[in-house]
Image 1 (cartoon, one colour):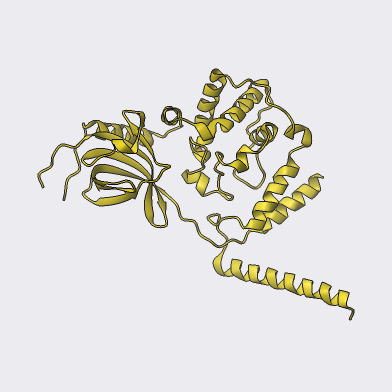
Image 2: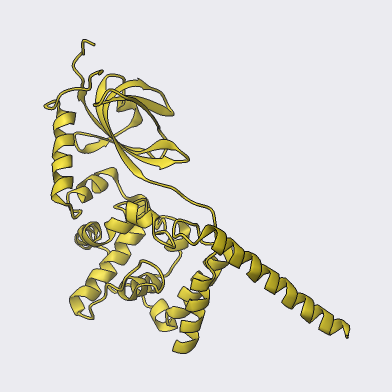
Length: 199
Length: 106
């Protein structure tokens, strides 16, 4: 056997051992979406996402000006449609966001902020396969403008003011139970509900 | 290209293998502050328990629906804290500060 063949067979054996260890690990521990993606998955997924966005789309500039009105509309839209997973502050610290696989990203960080406007728009419109990110685009002029507005709002996330966050809470979709809970909290903070007492 | 993309996405999906469990959850802590310092607050909850919540530089504060600061948090105030469980401990994401609690007679 030549030296070259030995190297190839050695590589095959190492790969087979790796697959065996991974398989044993899956059988023993199962697979949960609570896990953090491995480094190789992160690299592959980002590469896949990059490939999935056509170059022309990546290079598209935001045609919508970032006016206060556009930002306000996008903020309301984000609170209503996106915050369930991403959170009002875009950090993904929600029950849904942190239990997805991969977890909803912290969009205030460079990994999202360094994406081009076109890339963010494409992701909003088309979603990302094998993640929890759906395609929101409806193909209408109105939804296209809304998605470009969201691009501006996502850029604004790192500087989101506490007042904006508080206003967004009123725009989040809520169940009757959550509305009742909010009312109880408000009453408690304002002093109308009984104070804590020792049992 | 589409077939290659589908194969690659399958490979990514099949590569799941990390085993580090990240347990997280949100918790609302409603009560009166009994101790406050720069890094934590102790809250006597409405059911009489005392809960310790870590305060971090990322913690946001609100009073009367307006932004407040850590300096507004003091002992004896009604609070509602939106906390996250991290490594078994509670970390405040948001603290809503209310009125001072009336004195209690235990």
